[in-house]
Image (cartoon, rainbow, N blue to C red; front, side, top):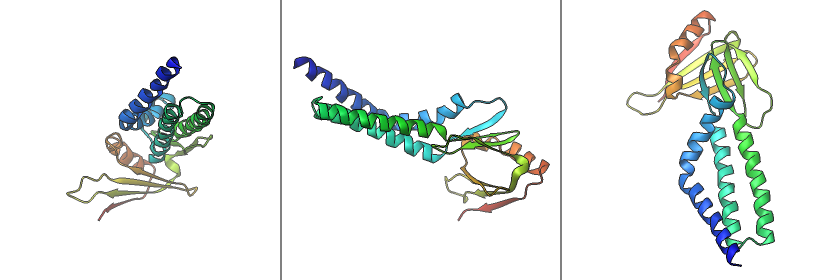
Length: 187
């Protein structure tokens, strides 16, 4: 019985650490996955969609609940079974969140949504229209890029520091491929 009580507290510590460091974990891991697993030479920027962060956060929350169930359930059979099922669900959510990314390069856009198996590629020559919505002056908001492709797909990206550095390259691609661009200002 004494060894079970000590082992129980491991889950309390593990769950508490995940809860305490969850903001850093949620921010870092989903943004590092595309740069690590989907790296391709000459890619300007890797962009992680907000949905990936949300799904990863839900998975992390489920893991924290698993630790709480194991601690408060005193490692009984029902607690272990429930935690195993929830841990598998968290693993599926982690896998799905790792699938979503957008990569912008000299050739065009490579993107895949969360839980999608197939990557999609659209070259710069397939962009039908681009819209850049600049943030209103005096606000801390970032610009929004909206790319509409000839096949009807739409990519919406919030400007990050990495995306901001590629503006000159994007303007060059807009000019080379004769892509109409609308610049608007947010209200």
